Length: 262
Image (cartoon, rainbow, N blue to C red; front, top):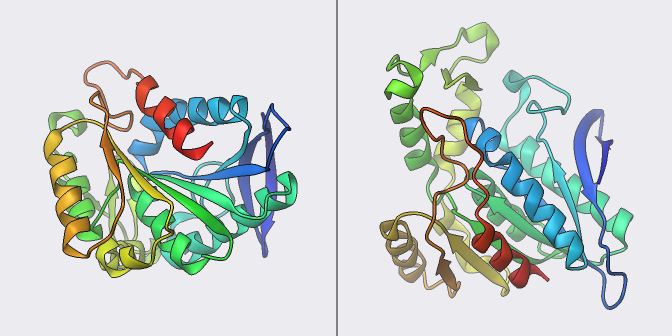
């Protein structure tokens, strides 16, 4: 595991590279597209474990923070989804350069799955496979969920906190900034708009409630997207566990993710 910074124009992005332990056979590589905010915090350990297991299965991987988040450069008020889309492109190229892979798999969790799906369409010549892990399907629904969480006892029921216009406007949600520009970008995202153009080798992994699988199947059926879906019941790694902050490692789901990717 090697933490490092890599450049995206004048911006510096933080990444962690996990090499493949098995050098035999074709070179395989995977870029992780993280969820946002609290969901990233809760799922960090699970994503790290997935990267370790991919390495053991002979797959190089790169985890990274989008511009304005985590340990990457920048402030949230300067970030938007176009910038994050370019961050994904930069991460793809960085991992291709490091590993020697011609193409990569994109593994996206929650909002990261929606970003990965769009990137797989835009950068189709560099992506050969897409793994949608508990994917967000509609940006507006995602924002509604985030605002609803802020009203829960977990966050003292205070709801989203407005941010000053000078700092990009929008709201602070569970301690994380969603500027007016970012909220607009997320609201306009919908998997239906690009799902028919996704890579042939796309796969969805669902944890938690059965209704999530039913909804996902309904969306894919409505746009005739032939994407296999598998639900592996368990506690989603990205959900907060109240009152104790416990990191969930969905071992069976990660094993299946490795099987599909490797």
